[in-house]
Image (cartoon, rainbow, N blue to C red):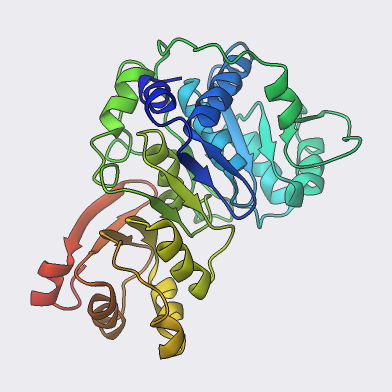
Length: 331
């Protein structure tokens, strides 16, 4: 795919690129998979917006769907996997989505949601055995029937469309703002700009939050730079500490609630795990209580970056641990 992935496939083919609790892909496999997905997606009639949606819990495949869209020059819409069929259908229709990716946990709701659309759209699902409902195709079969030839990186990149909570009863769709979108005339330039991301050079990135949120979804863009990514299906305080130790995770994006739940673990549990690999832990979503932040800095060290922003505008400002310690409570 993009030169970064194809280079990684050549220089470190057997190193793990991405994994969750039940599946992993090395760089050679990831490059081949993304090539196949892009070669399948690019010729499809996806409308003028060139938009797909991902309605799925955290998994390797969730990241693949978003990453395939990125490299195919498509706009992907992360749909909250807690939404019911009617709520999901609203987002699919409002966004102009023309293809839906979903996981096994959400397949029934995805089928119901698509049935409510004025014009039904195809669904792609993964890790489901047996006969699939009408209009649903298997990701595994899709990949097996697609070419893994390196596609051209000549299409312009498109931003994700993200949905806010809305103020009139319905979510509002907004394109990933310029402050968060790397831009570039084509995918090759886009990925090159992504390489300047401060997370990219640190090492393994750990995703702990749901990937329908901007912060956790950034793991896809980090993966595109050739940085390995580990995905937790859902946040668990001890499992997170174990994942940091096992993968030697160097970066992550969390929220203050995650910090509080880790701090609430018994001291002997917290002390079992080595978190010294962590070099940058960005947190957002809410203001972090002063006592929680101080205790986290004492535990992990001054590796925290507090980011303040919103879906519509991206990150507005941020503060490092060092600056925060001189002005506790700052955002």
